[in-house]
Picture 1 (cartoon, rainbow, N blue to C red):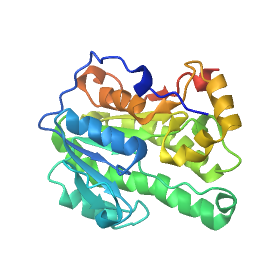
Picture 2 (cartoon, helix red, strand yellow):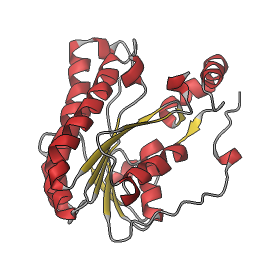
Picture 3 (tube, rainbow, N blue to C red):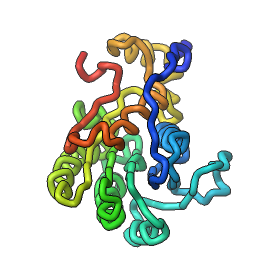
Length: 254
């Protein structure tokens, strides 16, 4: 069944973001939500760096206007190398992560690999970027959790567990780094029409059930997540830290 998207019901936005002179890093910025967020920051004037796990030539997208770096969250040395390569980082968006379908996440090896990338790797990158964020004077971290952090998942228990931990990490770093002038918040997307969700979108029964439970009556689009992320990175959210913002069309409240 066709999925109704935000673009089909688009309205003219009356919010203008300006990130001129600021440098933003979006991990997992090669496709889906990460790519949309990177494009949103770039269109608002930011200098945007993105990461992907493969070499640049492996992607069809040329990432025009974006600075690309190959980076694997599970690489213990990679975070420090990425931080050293960047002249500055005012906003860190931790969108990148690892997800295995069952049964691999129900094995010790699969579970540990997911935790190593999604949780340990994300913290490692936050720590590596901390000096840049301090130097900014108004550094911002936006972590990506998930609605699975709230519900759990029988198919991807490691992914769900790391996203739950991401909420706690967000609250903890918000407290630890407040004195450094760094705000740390999290986004929890719901059912967003991205390549990762292609199988669900293409399944008429599954898609209909998702839409039926979503109060706003449609799948989300990657662009639906951009505004909330950019808002959290602006001075309009200067008194917001340690917060979790669900972007799910009301699914988690239904």
